[in-house]
Amino acid sequence: MKSRQVDQKQTGRKGRESPSLPVITLLTDFGSSDYFVGAVKGAILSVNPLAVIADITHEIPTHDIEAAAFTLLAGHATFPPGTIHMAVVDPGVGSTRRPIVVQAGDYFFVGPDNGLFTYIYDREPSHKVFHITTKKYFRPSPSTTFHGRDVFAPVAAWLSRGTEPRAFGPLITDAIRLQTSLKPVQRRDGKIEARIIHIDRFGNCITNLTRDVFDDKSHPTLLIKRNRISKFLDSYSSAPPNTPFAIWGSAGFLEISLNTHSAAQNLGLKRGDQLILDKS
Image 1 (spheres, one colour):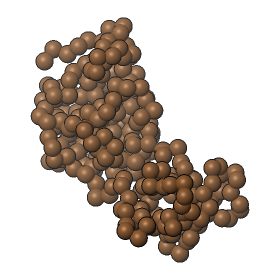
Image 2 (cartoon, rainbow, N blue to C red):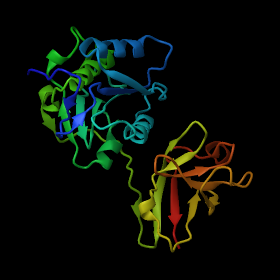
Image 3 (spheres, rainbow, N blue to C red):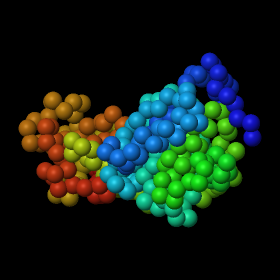
Image 4 (cartoon, rainbow, N blue to C red):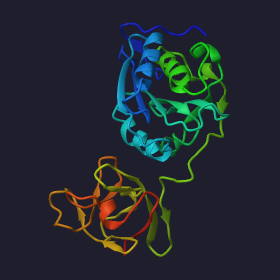
């Protein structure tokens, strides 16, 4: 397939004009002490020297697919439409797990089919997933241990040059998903079952509760382990000392916090813990 070359301006896939310098983001568990991140950037620039590369993070805990899934969800939409998000947390590299390209909303995603894009699928039900099988887009003699450099980086770069997702391989409908979900469970008695989906570096416990499950008439309470949280605040500074509270975080989810302290550590909470929202 003849790919479209990047000019001073190019037309986006939805017919609108997009910037001449396409953006490719990187999200990995590679860290910064080895050559891995630099090699990935080199592989991208070898295909498209005009690509703009932005790092979301390379400090995802090793092999922590669920942390990567949340971080990608929280950060991807701040980038311009047409951005290509390359996400690699890949404990199954070299196995039969599939490399994929995902087209979801205004964005593209490149990475392993291991559940990393689960929350993107949840947010964009009309997404399309393509199994990367066309090896001419890979680096020569790809390593079985470094698909980030040899498969995902060049594919992301070819996407940035205008290659359509279908050129990389067939459409699939059985992409791997995590067992967890963004959607809380509605109960008949006015209570909602939710869970902690992420804990950030400050110890804030991010739940999968979003504003649409609340209403102006209720006086909600969160029940988690032995903790009862009824304070819903707008800022960290307004919190009384040593008192846990709920706050709407920047990613759009309700968080359990403790001002200047780790709520996770002080309340004994961890990712996956269940909680109840009582709206009565």
